[in-house]
Image (cartoon, rainbow, N blue to C red):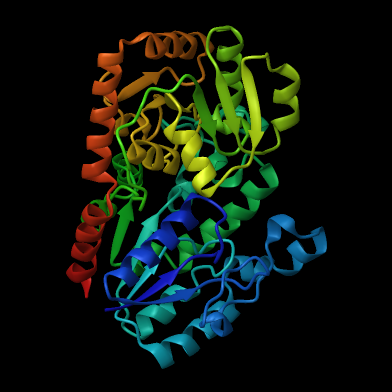
Length: 402
């Protein structure tokens, strides 16, 4: 099968790109030909198809005038449509699998794919498809005054716009253009949601998603190499920003002097967190590859304290596949990945007291109970996050629309 894989970035930027490259690698190892389509960037990995990539700036790193100049292409990128058409006319893929296209390629690529009769699958990594319906509303659909201050992280529009009102306006322009002229739900043959939570949120907005979607958890090629020993520290790895709940975690650990926490990552809160930290909290900076894997493997638990609507965090996928259980906040798609007290622990989102108690309870379990938690977490990961399980489900989706 010849598969067109589409993502805004052709380098490892975030969780969506990890899934994008993992999918490419998996398909190629299974004998399929994969054709990537992305933006041009100095950070890109090598690709023989780079000549077809789209020349479009990263607006978050651009000056004001560059942003203004590129607003039309932000909403409808004619160059992306032209470049894709040139690629399709030469390669004729059997199917197109979109990961991220907004803020760059835009919906301009959808009519091109349809014109060439290419079936379209879209993995939904965020809430951009339903942002207009949730503008200035909380997760229950109620009007949210706090949205204007950017302090209400359960609000989907702020999940989409990183809590920036200017970004919210720009995203709303894009969203309303899509809703009027190029609704993705009318072009995409099958949506893959990475959590049941995300799928249900979209169905709440438009019931058509129910018949045009499925959910498949993210996967990782990581494998547990040996029986895991109990570590003596907790670990957080990822972006150090407010919506990730890292401040709540640091406050909880500060109140728990017998708990050790290692923090891996960078972000806007790094310096302020360092100033507030006590001796039992260690900041180790950004880690990746085998070094990150070793920190995860040797930890007692990985903490995922997010205060925004996470879908299927790669931190949970990668950690439990190794065999390290999770302490997670009770929000978004996280609870469906943790059987509380059996494969990990859940705490009340944003609550320092709740997290402090759960950290203590998790650390206090007997060695025998801890081994049971590890095995339960690993078994869930094996059944849901493995390459083989993912490939079987992905091929079923592909074949259902070709």
